[in-house]
Length: 392
Image 1 (cartoon, helix red, strand yellow):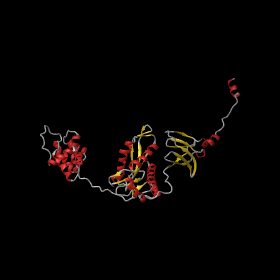
Image 2 (cartoon, rainbow, N blue to C red):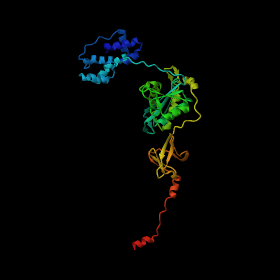
Image 3 (cartoon, rainbow, N blue to C red):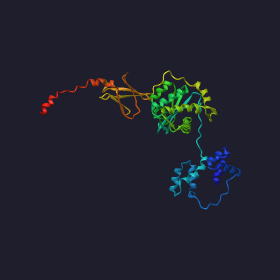
Image 4 (tube, rainbow, N blue to C red):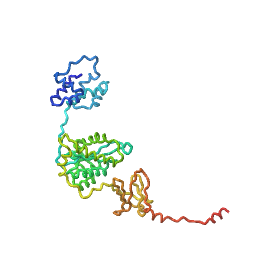
């Protein structure tokens, strides 16, 4: 049954021009109830209640807190508990819910960008089944601001190297590079972003920006809505792609299905905000994108390693052989995202390995240690007559 305050909310929302179904959703009643209340011109006459609510003595205090813009139900619950309220939190939530429609909210102006101007980037996580096991999948979503065309790539981590790889794959998917890339404040791109100051970007992210010719941008702290277009696409992927596809044979299978779904469904969707099909709108944006560079940016990990005295190096829990002449020295490694490991002594390439799927182990190339074995002392051999003399 509608209360007087419910009708006041219905009347206020109707004055604003909201549809009956939207009003019903916000008030928590059936649309027919809203129509009857509007036709009646008021709330139905209240029926005498057999008993009051435990919340009744605290309604004035609740309304006072709401008027002071305190809308957190748990905070209000603690306040009235201190005054003696013994009811449940759910009763309080039911009382506050119809009033939320009247809350004064800060207006947010949607920022529309020109063709080729901006790409928004962010990471998200999902847990589908991969190769028969439930697996944490990290996926990077990159959305063009003008056309709303987006691309996403799934992998097992979201560090700097994978962030750069995800951006590059999106540039290649779009066939061009936007003027600027807007990222959140993840350490892979932004080292520091003090309030009121400009962001200090990761040196390698700046290097990537220079290679592809875009300007790096960072969201202001605590203002995730700055890249709201990309946040919306994260939800779209979770509620469409990962609902339609829930199990994958491998990472390659997952990303193949992702690109098929992007072509067949995501690009063909009608975007309600711009009132246009995404593929058609992108056709107007594509000429504004900058061309891809002649060479692809190298996203491989580059690190230094100390060679042990048995001529092995440690890389992510595994040991890999290097030429014995490098024992005790420092070498440089290059590890690609697909598991190719190269070892360098200054600029000279000295070893190549393929990272196996196992968690640990020793990977040895026999030729690396041939010189070490050649230097091994020959075991002294004694005639058996020596032992015969001892036992006699």
